[in-house]
Image (cartoon, rainbow, N blue to C red; front, side):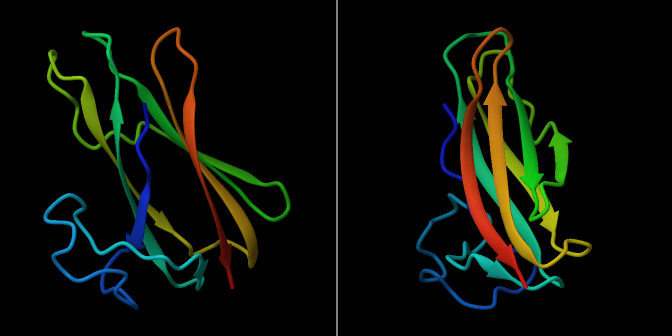
Length: 128
């Protein structure tokens, strides 16, 4: 199971989506509800992945599809390798907007166990 993906600004947030301590340490940054970003922004992604089978670790990837169908992929987004008896892990990534052309984007974060079907969370956003 792949939990929701929180998105926030890397560095100072432009606006506060919640009170500063509303998440009580659950998310390491202030998430944003914005889905329109400047080319100078850098985003942070955060979530959790959970599974039942012991002794395995899912592969978590991120695919970004741009306005012209261009794709970028990044493998292995698990920030902390889980212990052998642990069946959950933190998913984290930095996503710079620099170099992206203006337009609409589709971000797909997916997790797959060996021999399993992928589960994904999708985020749509725009760069202006």
